[in-house]
Image 1 (cartoon, rainbow, N blue to C red):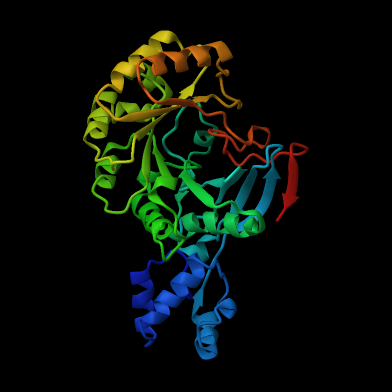
Image 2: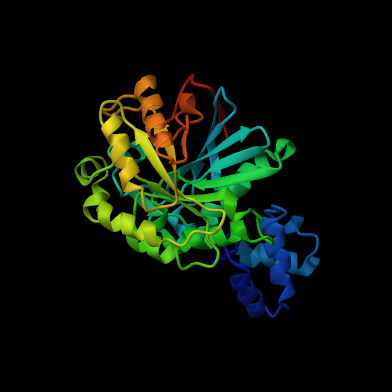
Length: 359
């Protein structure tokens, strides 16, 4: 079976080329071609000898996910529906589909990517949870979502690229593959992104947070909090029963922040559930020992028994945090009209909403 090269680190490529009897610099050439130049066929890698390109075409492969649909929002965001390679090609449990979202804005573009097909964490307000966990993604499948989005929009890319690991899945439950992908994204000889511009969002997997704290190369960490006490969080996020708030906040307090860094907390505001002034005041107390920044996210509609918060509630919640000195921002999600917003990624196929284009 041909060897998959997409997702391999420099060290892994070096080992592969050593096995072919090739010098080490061939690994660096292929690594740069894949991740910095986004060349996805060996024929395009003109810095390699023709004989080696022919051999790689026979013995190796570069597998990109297939774009089966693009849903284009009125705000310019694009939701990609990707079909992943079937199990006989990937050695995975089964074939799967995932989503990524490309969001252009002035001076930058943000790419929201998935780390698992589906999700096992079962947050009650998130449509992705309805899928359950289908399978983990490989490092190559995670990186590929960024590479494909960048290549598709290369003619109009802004200077700054942000990547958020906030699509389908819980990143810290697919730790090794996620960090393999993150290292490639943050390597200046690879995709070349800044750690300031790559964020990983977790529902609060405490062992994963503790492990991430030890990494020399790591993204910014965001905690999907969404509640200010255990009773409330147990009801919204069952993972809280395994890693309750006291345990989670202890890990957050110990987490080593870089000089420029805040620990980000995401708080999805659910109308009449967690958006009251007393919720805001409890949240302030909960975050008292952490250098925190809060993103308030008004809930995005879906076929779930929740409702959007009233604008007055959002404003009041924001004002309470701000008055107590907590850096806080209200983040209105992009791509809501094509089910591309936070909590909406559930492989929904939409007819007549936005612009639908087959791959």
